[in-house]
Image 1 (tube, rainbow, N blue to C red):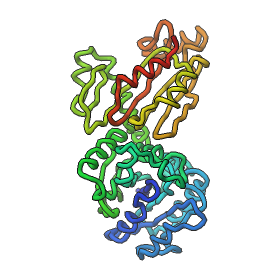
Image 2: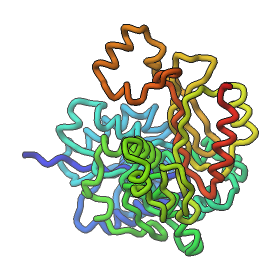
Image 3: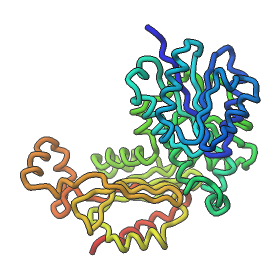
Image 4: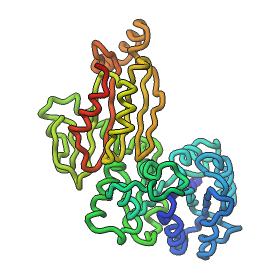
Length: 391
């Protein structure tokens, strides 16, 4: 059976150290024949030139430069074709893709898994590696200073949101420039990353110096598992599982030492990093909720994601998402409670679990939001959210 060529996708915000890491790995690849695809949003691919200058690969040989666009969107087709062309040469053991600093990893993975019927027959995604600048992350997540305020010329609308997305969908986090933060900050950063992405391997380093074996042919990536691996999904699943247990058993399953509790009590946190699930049946008043988001949303919340509904449209559920300054709400499907009596009866017969979650007044409608943050005042946040609910 022909071996599938493993592909490693390297992501990370601008200045995190992706190119330094890539140059180090290529200079120490221990006999591996690696091809490299480098993406830059500008007209001139500076990263490709820096890698070529490093001497490990040549710009016109095993290094492909894709520029003036992002491989997660406008250059997706070009990326697929370049991968197929490199594999067709039969010269390479693996392929590394350095994404632009403003790329989200999930669309790249989707393109490589389903963008061409030939791809699954010749290659596989071996890992998604997110490089994080430790000092920059400490400034953003630990100090309370917003990067966007001091980086007005960044090409992203919200740096923090992009960093969160890159961490949530990866198999390995390389925490780079660790000597630039204090030991206490490093411990807190580990806790933040673990809360956002509990399953990823964390590698700590300076100057991008890691062993090639730590990102080559690791077998760590599985798309379905990656889609379920984010911390907010873990919190939601744990909450759902514990609702089926008596209170005493649910309390016993909480990780109080590390701030994970779904039984309604307050417990200690790991370096101030904690999470909880907010669940209510009534709908949000859209005006009250908008005012809360605009004026009262606490900076201590790093990430919030889940299902919500609003009283101005009782038929629709919404996928609510917040990371940093970025807040979105997208239609997520119609509530069963808004369907006809016949449709409800058929759906509940087909899925008996619907009855267990059915409310006499609201049906299947509910607010179900996961909050991840640092030094959050959980009680105050819950009270503020409750004030946004319909009377």
